[in-house]
Image (cartoon, helix red, strand yellow):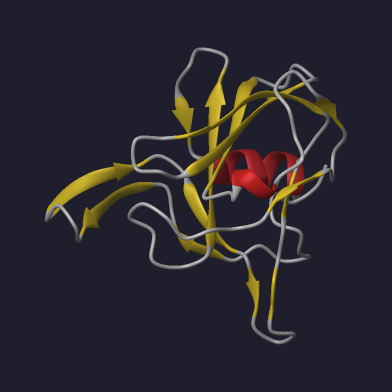
Length: 143
């Protein structure tokens, strides 16, 4: 298993849970975790990668113009989808239905929609279709 950002240490910049939406001025549910994808020491961006062997389910833009790649893990580990959001999908060389290995390069960060910094928004969806705190997935499978 690999980290969703190609780095040895993941840095969470925004956790799963309720947070204040500065644009719409209201509390909203943040259904994923935001992970830093910039190496300040070496001054370089870090790519996103598949955490495990998967099939590419969808590559699209959402209503806020964010690039999204959705993967289906090949092993039955209780999760049916892993979502990578804020990906520059025009530069990724993936196609829907493609089988990829853990560590496969998915793409690079972009700033679009309501995002104001380079990061990966990572979501995990269980077999019942419920969005689960990705920290649980990371703690169980990646640490």
